[in-house]
Length: 477
Image (cartoon, rainbow, N blue to C red; front, side, top):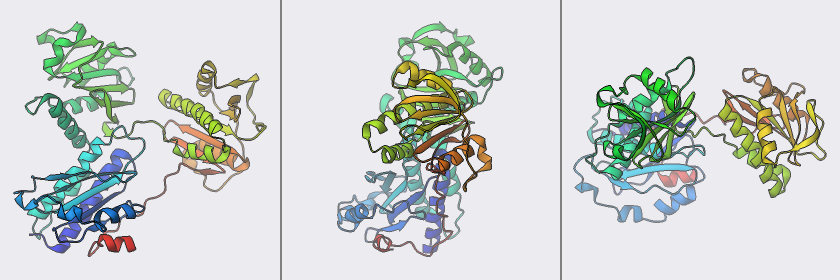
């Protein structure tokens, strides 16, 4: 059996492999593990980047103040292999995703990672944590003193498998365990088509995969003869056929290995849908978003801007909930429109009264952005070079504005003129919030010459420990 030091190394490598994989899938993420190998062992914590900090009271309540987790546990001695498990209910810790289990080799284990606010779904990540728990149980059961260390690599490259595993679980619930729907080939088709250009254009439109039993219920506009159904493996042909469903309610319908035809109207509940939006797209199961995809990979992101820092900055600066809410609604709608159209822009939210003067194109009268037609106009004006000047009266005062200012610390030449001009301008003027939308760098919220939305550098992962602290020791650290 595996020695103690090798178990420590195994845990640390698996946690790090999980962190690397989920960071590729969801952006910079932390991972952590709490576990008790035997029933009488103390709960131990491995939290190399402080993910669980702030949750000490809840963990103490669950595992130190109470012994229910130990005494009311199922008898894991009845389990004959690491493949047999007792799943554990996720812990209700705000901002975290968790998954755990009990097995013959590990009495209790619970894995954690960050719950990012812009996730399409937490389901693939939950499957990822479940896989990590299975791998750890396997390593503790079968590994010897020679530790090969291949499991962390499997965890790191698990993205497509996590998506597939969740889809299979849901299909089994909808169709039964004897269902035959090959999910991996479907995911390969989606990623393959997403990378295939047609006359220099990225794919757009919907490709729907259905179960053979539901085909008769579809409203086909075109149905291909059995012997002439295009093969899904021919990505170029599928890409060409998507041209027929662009910018419409029509769907390209596939079952098995082929394209059946083009249909309209309501689709069956049991379906896998790939929505292509150009350079990126979304994967949906039964009509619900599961993940996004771009550049040949799956991601958890819903590709919507994270405007939490903007909300906080507006609330602190305005002091008026109604003013904050309206400004946030106006600016967020413009930002989302800019992202969908794929161009960059700058918005200057001017909280001064009266608003400051900014060089730019002025209309005879400020434009009331509370009116839907005016808001649509502002979305179009965001395409013009220069910034939109929006005041706390909810009016657009100028567009195509030039932002000036002296050089400030924190400038980043790699981010271009739009970003650095926003830093300089916001440093020079009080009561100003600048939103910079970049086609390749996302959304930056800037105030007082500082980017509020900048990611904090995560604590480096320690390479090795002789022992993990008990939960009681960890709380007292």
